[in-house]
Image: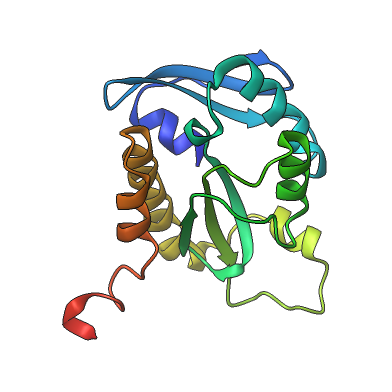
Length: 174
């Protein structure tokens, strides 16, 4: 997601800083910093905290993007705040920030081949199968579009537009 967002706006994520790879640029008339923590996922809150302290005036200006096994492949869920749920990376972020009051974008990664009896770690670290890319690629594009709205200060609009299925929730099919 970070790479796709960076590519769209010619932001090179090539600077090692505060336990992350970062890049900065301008999006929708404002300055943005895009970061990929280098810590293990279960400790990603450490990098998020360091970056937030350095670059963010308010947690409302931060958005955390992460994978979500509880959502179907390519599905998006954007929230202005909320609990970490069962995601260990988000538990780390919430604990490090001592707050649940920051926006987040969850990207569904539960594909057809997900087996609840298998090892979750192995599943989420595996590459997507070629057959899944038809859902993944458009999902990433939609996520980047949602992040642009966030960068414009339009979180509510992003939630309204991207928290529904792209076609199955459209007015024509309801």
